[in-house]
Length: 107
Image 1 (tube, one colour):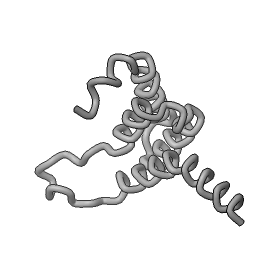
Image 2 (tube, one colour):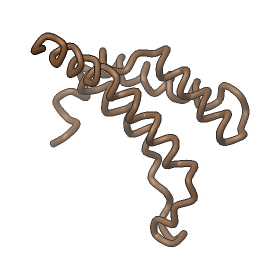
Image 3 (cartoon, one colour):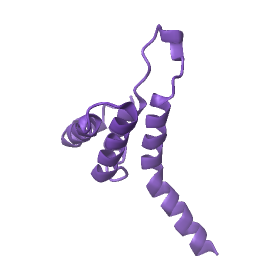
């Protein structure tokens, strides 16, 4: 029993970053009136890709980021592959600057 609970907990922790990115893409598409149009809507998917790339680089893999970027393109009706390439570029830039950002982000 304890082993199955441990496996369930491990599976949930592995899928949480991808699920958070999925939910943030859905929230971006829902017409929420944050700030009543006076304040730009926060771009949560890019924030999630950035933060997971800095703090837990192995938690959010590139194929998941690419697939959810394509989903974002399909749901938004934009150019196919645009957000997928933006998310992957953000992930790559953060990976290359991770040593520099590790001590500075979150202060």
